[in-house]
Length: 104
Image 1: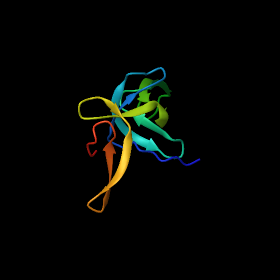
Image 2: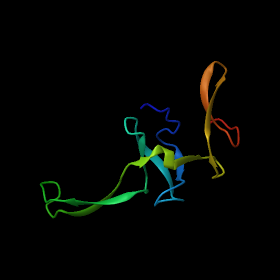
Image 3: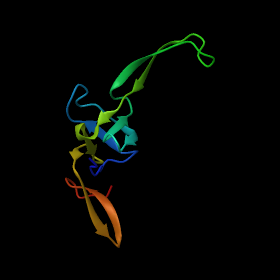
Image 4: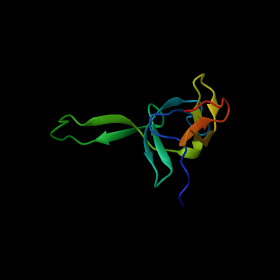
């Protein structure tokens, strides 16, 4: 089911629920099919790598995993969480923070 995703790549967000509650980071990628996002430094998982030509030693690396959009909240310039709204300004559709009424 397609849901309107109001968080975009490059936004600073805070995790509002779940195991990583309170963590903040920048959105690196959005997956519209899954309604999930990858946030920098949040929801890190360990990946076991087999030795190969690029990494002859192999080993364990950490990378960010997807986190559901409903668990994220956009941050305003002063670091508070807010919901996102849309409005028309000068014939252009813009996003704005509902708490502070500032254009994002």
